[in-house]
Amino acid sequence: MDSCGPFPVQFANGHSHHFHSILDDFSNLGSTALLTTCDQACDHFKSTAAQWELKSGNKVRAVRCDGAKEFIQGNLRDFLNEQGIIIQPTAPYAHQQNGKAERYIRTIEDTAQTLMAESGLPMSFLGDAILTAQYLRNRLPTSTLPTLVTPFEVMEGSKPDLSHLRVWGCQCFVLHPKETRRKGDIRRFEAIFIGYDENRIGWRVRDMNGRYFFSRDVIFNENTRGHLKASSSQTKSQSPDRTSEAQETEIEPSLSLCPQTVSPTIAQSDQYIEPLQPSESNHSRPK
Image (cartoon, rainbow, N blue to C red):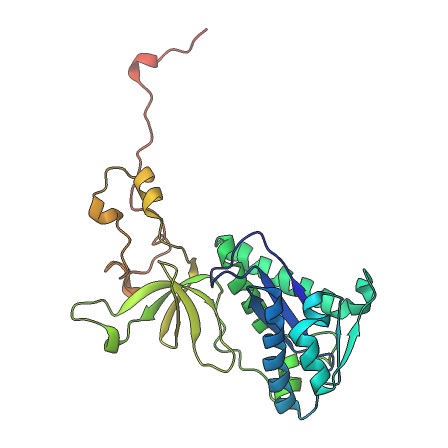
């Protein structure tokens, strides 16, 4: 296992600056969690080890990690000693001794950066991209396993279902449940697709105001990138002629964002600036 961070930006799910990854050496299955502080790695390891031991029927025998204090000291070390798990800390600055975990961290980072570049979303979405990268890597073949065998298949004993995969960061429209919908409210609101949850059927989305939701009733517009609503200060600077009512941040989405009107230009501004025409008085060029 290994951790990565701190990143120069806060992840949108809270105050996380780090992520912690655990890699099973046999199945190559990984688990990643976003951490606010490094000492939270202990809770992540406890939950992950319990799940993997139950699924595989095998006990964790040894843990290899670097010499970080959150690994070899404190709560995590006490837990490993109680469970009889051998701790194998690497020599100082000998990254090669934990090379598989180090390379896996880089793979997760590269996959997340690819998702970010393709979606065009701001860096605050990096945490969601990291979790999605981990989810996808568990369902992709790897050279450490036989041909076309995925880590998910080794651990679960069955091939993964990929029918629910969608283009990360695309525009989507989420059903507004009738239990929380008032009379006259729209039935769907615009959001951005930002990932999946293990052991749950549905998708994680983020609405225009930055709030997170999980839903199984989502319509995807995979050809259009998602976007956040511009802040009130940006809206005022870009279009000072708009009324104060239009500048307020609304919790409920606009009625014009229904799925029936999806078009490739829905994310663009509704203002058009006519190009300047040359003046008749300036018909001659200076000599």
